[in-house]
Image 1 (cartoon, helix red, strand yellow):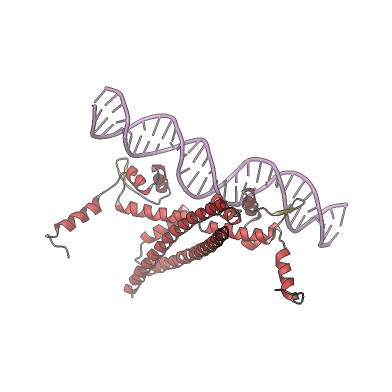
Image 2 (tube, rainbow over the protein chains, first blue to last red):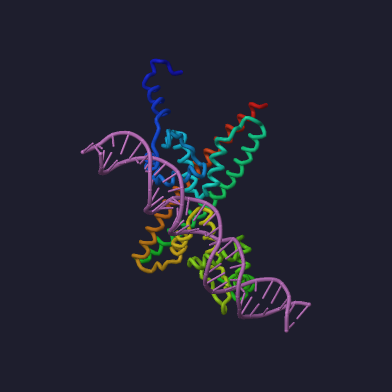
Length: 141
Length: 141
DNA sequence: GTTGACGTTGACGTCAACGTAAAGCAATAC
DNA sequence: GTATTGCTTTACGTTGACGTCAACGTCAAC
């Protein structure tokens, strides 16, 4: 348990908890444009705080942005990504809700595992193709 | 080595080599519309034979269609898919060409391996999330 | 000989995921 | 002060990946 003497740790915690970012900062950090970030907000994928009219991004928003971009790298459409990350934040108080969430998890898992099969097949073919190319290269001396 | 006595095998080979398909057949088989198949042709991803004006699909076209759709499931854009499957058919006679192809293979592999990392991370998070949900469910009796 | 079933070529429509001005506010920099 | 920098909204443009007619050819079946 942290005591008042554990000052360094608590200071770092406080920093990480309370630090916020501007739209330019998060955009640069994740290698996207501010337009992209705002687009995700329009679709309800992130909901940054507003100070007046200016957007303020917290750690939670950066976490979500990371999930969004990973989902994109995996080829998911943004609408589907939204349902996924909403799932992580869904209320899970009642049994019916938990069971619904668990069902959704199963669907997601099946999807991801199909993708992994495709991915492994593609990698295997690529490896075999490389082997043949190297064999051809050897034949050329 | 096949002898003239190996009739059954040779008959099957001949069937498989010479059987062709209509656009409706390939579309149905791969679960896409004829419009989609023609779209891929417009982009140069497949080039079926023409008998008069009618398209005739060979095994080679079906193989390509399979690669295209797997690429799509993995989230690749069609233009990129085209460069990939063209790579498999590229001439590899000269050393310089082989070295180019091997370089492309490396790029592809790096891309696919990044995707696999993303995929594994997503699956791990999903599993952890499921664990927490089941724990919550246990608490409800 | 006409009716489907299946094929063809345009050509325009649509949806997602942004890009790209245009025009304006708000704070710091000179 | 004003000029630049950074943020904002509004709104139209673009690209990819098809969908969706329209208008027509062709061939077997009835």
